[in-house]
Length: 357
Image (tube, rainbow, N blue to C red):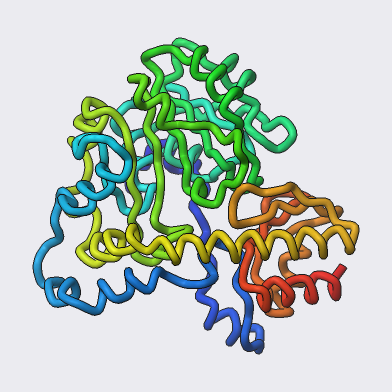
């Protein structure tokens, strides 16, 4: 029997969903609607698709550019930072994992809100560290309480803004007050996977703290609004000194040739981003109205999904919807998370929901 560290053996592995085609075969249904993973319903940027069908695909017999030279250059130019202040990852998930392995050692603490992104405590526990979960207040990060939870054992703080799965956000004034209380030797990881969807005028400006020289790692992704989830590519922004340490353990070829080419092209597709935002706003407005009609409680969202509060077992409701060909995500007892889809997908969800309630 192989020896497994106790902090690994006690982890609950992430359980992936089955392929949609397999679910349809098992349940005997067709034309199912997947609203479980916060994907962009209009698909990838057409400019990204064009990049995949040109010269890039001819070069897949070669190893990718391990430094992501051209993509990092374009990102740095857009963000007004130096190339050395940008790091690429196999999705932003990989980057938060690299950060934990770089800056934490067994016994250290990381502070995070709860409920929030499930990968944070998993990455922390896998390093033999302690995930200090601070309950959300009003279903958003309670930043004063999170600051109170920081001790001399704390090495990192995770903040998802907007938060997943609740879709809530923290305003600039809240975040500024929080940063004043964070010790200089604590790394604040700011996960902004959904920031392109935000419409709130008082949304926190994370880049301000980066430019002020604070120890922050800002994580963003091409998986959501750019529609490149299947290619797995994201990026981080931090000081050159922080990224120098992270690059010590980053895999040499952690982002592929096609992912880099697609992301490079997607950055120029402003029309795709505009259309994605527009369809998301229209979809949220429709779903809000229908949920109110059905007298169901929901949380106004700054992302591309809606957190619903329900009475009873959310897993049972999930199963009932699944049998009607609608796939959503249970989000703990008494809660469901539903991605905003195209209008026909949103209306299919409401129709199925009304039928099973």
